Image (cartoon, rainbow, N blue to C red):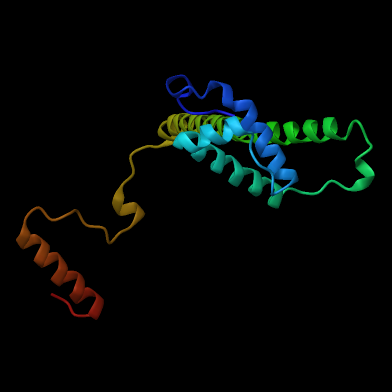
Length: 175
């Protein structure tokens, strides 16, 4: 138990009597503190507050504690096994985030590797196919491919004339 600012108020010698008194209160609600401790508690507000806080914590622990079955009372290794299991569960909870970080880093590294490979394959395939394609291509006459292709108009007036003439050809009218 920690008694606040024990050196300044002269509370050093009261830790053990307070612990004994708390233990007695846990067993018997009508327990009384030793006369010396009672006199100190009457004059020290910090020790009274600490004692009250410890009583509340003790009551909370007693009310929420899981009762040990009577069959385990005689087992000398029950406390050892329970403590080991509690430590193991705490250790497993602490291992979750490092494992998640490791998984995330591995996943990002794999995704980056795949992206680099796909980019390299695309660049290599485009480079090889374009070199072969350009070697096979030769200039073609646009009129041989499509006889109705005309060169692009050079000024805005030619655009209007081209649109009017193509419209007339579609409707069957001649210029």
